[in-house]
Amino acid sequence: MTAQREVILQVENLKKYFPIRRGVFQRHVGDVKAVDGVSFDVYRGETLGLVGESGCGKTTTGRTIIRLYEPTDGHVHFEGADLAATSGSNLRQMRRKMQMIFQDPYASLSPRMSVLGIVGEPLEVHRVASGKERKDRVAELLELVGLDPAFMNRYPHEFSGGQRQRIGLARSLALNPDLIICDEPISALDVSIQAQVVNLLEELQAKLGLTYMFIAHDLSMVRHISNRVAVMYLGKIVELTDRDALYSNPLHPYTQALLSAVPVPDPFIEEKRQRIILEGDLPSPANPPQGCNFNTRCPVAIDTCFEMEPEFIEVASGHSCACHLVKPKGPLVD
Image (cartoon, rainbow, N blue to C red; front, side, top):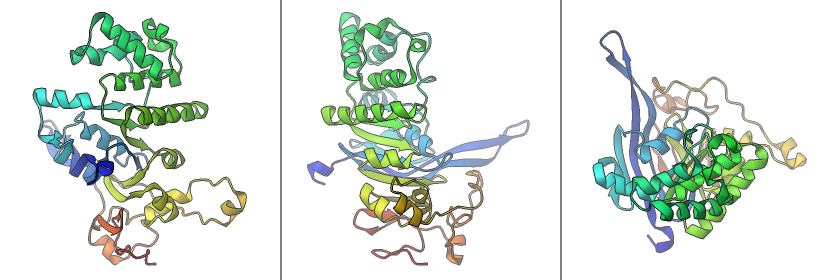
């Protein structure tokens, strides 16, 4: 890899199963396969978008990568170290380099702590700064995210949703991380505030050289902020490629259906577009279908789709897909 395409995060066959237990003795009767064999790379300085409908495992993937959830199987290599096999003080040191912005700015900030305590807590936990040095660093971070440092003695309930998300962003920047996992950071905000937060993320990325993994279900926003996009369905990644290639030439039937739902501001194009309506509900991750996970809703499924699980392979340069109907360097076969 060249310096411009240095891999900062490598995820290999990552799985996260939540056990299902029943009865008086809590017997293990099955598993909810929230993440089921996910593999991808994240390059330094880029933004990788992770999209999919609710319940597909996007958030669980992000939380498992940084070990908020313990992985069931697989490997997560961050800057050469295997996070899945790291524990204790070594994991604590690695966590200084990777942080997370949570979806709900109202639930992710402690109502009993002031902004000084919230943003300054990572500095104390990792023994980076204390006293006046900590206070000065918090003031610097608040200015960085567009907040008045005079607000540091206030509490979360005194702020709007957008301001709270900026506080969460300041907290994630406290230890100068290399990677930030953004778990739907704008979904709980007003539309008028969403663009401000996304623009701030882009400005900070350019200024600090950050790498983002941006989890979202808003395909328009993902197209704006991401360099590459991974599409997830029922615990698996079904397509991964550059942003422009995905939106101009989606190969997987699920990706095609997702993109057909995105409104186009041009009324002439919108009138001619074909809307793909998926029938049925998302299958349960506790009992996924045999073969391809998407076969119960796929409008072009063939017999093979119900018998064999498709392999996630590179079908064109930088474009990977998991579909029996997509051949290497060839279009989707009807």
